[in-house]
Length: 555
Ligand SMILES: *[C@@H]1O[C@H](CO)[C@@H](O)[C@H](O)[C@H]1NC(C)=O
Ligand SMILES: *[C@@H]1O[C@H](CO)[C@@H](O)[C@H](O)[C@H]1NC(C)=O
Ligand SMILES: CC(=O)N[C@H]1CO[C@H](CO)[C@@H](O)[C@@H]1O
Image 1: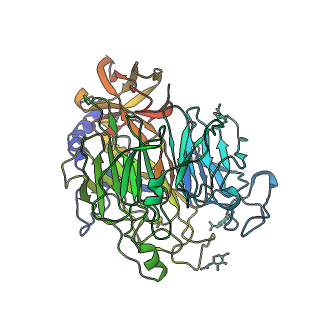
Image 2: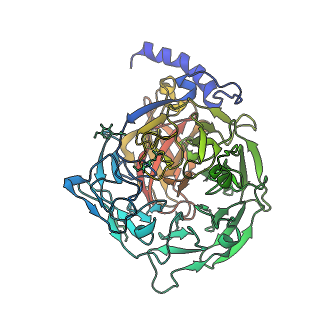
């Protein structure tokens, strides 16, 4: 980089530092025009990846496992090696030589088909501490199956299936990785209970959770409950309009929180979304705050079946669960949204992406796609938190998904609001493309303050032990705008990103080691309740601009 380019950068930096914390704030009446620096941009990676990315999970080798379901016809990609799947219980195909799962490689932008034997429709998953993805349940012949996928160096690894592993049918359940390395699997259609992976022979396999029975709707639906592991080791569970602090070891409700104001349900079939906002270890005592956004009002599904598509919910609620008497603080999104995905960005902001403005989840039940993502800055002043991003050209309706990838982009795929792969003759065709959204922080105008982690210079991440990270940045601002964060990649499906969490590590100090090169030291997470052991993406964030992430293993 020459001095003169630096000078140009410096000028744009002055501009940039103003923009960082105030991207455009607008009302829904006046959508701003496209500008990559402030509104991000979209890029189509593949017109066809062969399947509709209903479920997505990023793995530690920068590959993303995606899958839809085995029983809605032939996909647009063949199984490897001329393989076919013979399934007498399949409701549509019986003999199917197409794949319903793929492995996408971010670095090379290529993908290969994977083989699933049994139906994975509307299932759940978690990555274990050792990096293996455990997927649980599905539909029909797949509803009691556990499947694992372990990253490998070659191009041959594939799903392993464990039939009859689950003690109950898990169709629309939610999972959470626990501090002791187990996974809790909660609920599912007509399942008012939970179980664990790995299965524990000494304990009853299924444990009743009456809260799920109490909160079910008239159709007995109460699905994909929002689960978040809290720093005190309890589980936050949100279902319908209610939420609890749950001690899964004692099977006891430790506390019930107030109902979310407005009286509207938020989890499936309402299909709002939820995140646990970043846990910040720089605070004197750690605070945990849950955020829930959007969804469809009660009865939206019944109305949609009759051809009446009602306006989705425009509010978000925040609940600081670590407060003594927490209350929901409500705010309005710029546009109402159902079936949105809430994904945490490396700088601690939250993107809400995909979904519709009318109707709800379900076959042909959504209308009026919301093409503009919005970004929410949790620490900005009220009414200045939402920024509207550039619009995609592709509706992402029911069965779409999104996930964060290491370079800070958001991978977006799927949309299949029908029972089959219908590419024509329907209002919202099945979408088998893969897109990526680059948030404003990736814009070239922030290049001067963008930190880059020096490869091989990240130490080993241990609980309560200091960690040094060496990074380069052309223009260093100050330690006040510097942070080091870890993010656990989510299993995203049906508008809920399971296991998603971010920890801002305790800052110990920063030193200038040589020109443009700095060494920051932080303290590893204090407990496995704050961050369960496993693989995380580590980001250095400087002036609101994140570095590309690097993988670290915490234990
Ligand atoms: C991780 O643990 C699971 C469950 O014990 C096992 O099936 C899997 O092979 C392990 N993965 C690795 C990479 O060792
Ligand atoms: C969707 O595809 C299925 C199977 O190919 C077909 O039976 C159905 O009629 C299609 N629906 C529409 C609306 O085209
Ligand atoms: C709908 C769709 O994308 N169909 C594609 C399936 O794959 C073939 C090539 O293998 C394409 O030609 C089709 O357009």
